[in-house]
Amino acid sequence: MFQLDNLIETKGFKMSSTKKEIITEVESIRELIKNDDLMNCAKLVGKIDARLELLLEKIAGYGISEGRKEGINKAREARTAKTKEKVQNAINLLRIEGKEITAYQVAKVADISFNTAKKYLESINQKAPAV
Image (cartoon, rainbow, N blue to C red):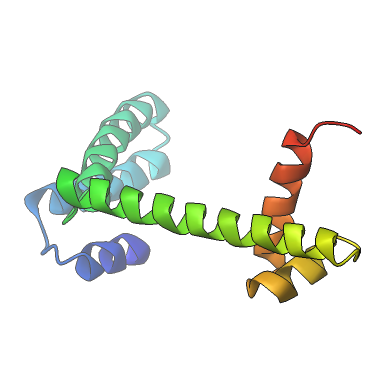
């Protein structure tokens, strides 16, 4: 429960009745397991699972409106397009200079990380027609 407590507190939630009920039900499960009442235990686990799912959905979507999600997606798309352009320009420059096109060289010329260059080179190489 410690991790659930931390997750809820970091997202600004206070101790809710749902969380209190879940804790009570978890304690009930422990008692049922001790008493070897597995049939009732399974029912209670299903009930808790559904409540946890609802609680986690609330936490996951907390504070992010649809408009903000759209803005985040547009910003990501713009960064991706800019990076692709940098990679393509670096590849063109390396071809003009007659140098080998490697992830390291592309990263150096485009001023991006090696892993980013590698990722975009793989996608470009898959799209490139065989010569």
